[in-house]
Image (cartoon, rainbow, N blue to C red; front, side):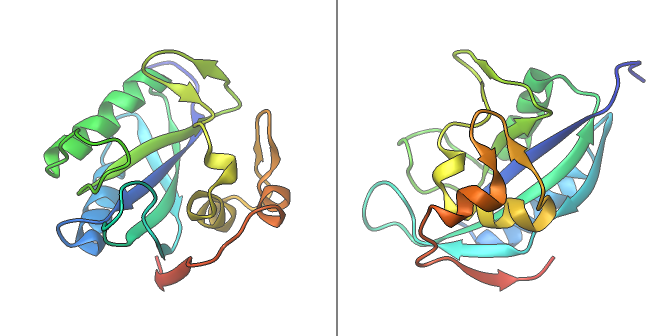
Length: 166
């Protein structure tokens, strides 16, 4: 067991292929089994129109709140391992996928590298991230952008709807 302190992290979950409801439920169970990590809560599941190439099915999205001793890169590796185990193939940017797990926030850390940007880019402009994030952490502030509740006031939620409760 690591002696590092626990840090709060938030993960965005998305799927629009191969039974998205099952994909997200399996991913939530996998998050709960990560080493040195505790799944604290997760949001309802939301449906939203796909962004990116035309002709994709709608996405199901959620946000999970974790406490973890894993470093940001170790957590990212673990998330990519869950994606791979659920059949994720990395092809077309913003294309359809079985599972997409994005590390949105890791504490108040801000970083930018080839592998990882924190906070996750554009999360502050996406209703499919901010609405479920507000559900699990209503008073959260996104470093460099502001309070989740204030950010939601500035964006459209057209097409976003709750489809399943936690």
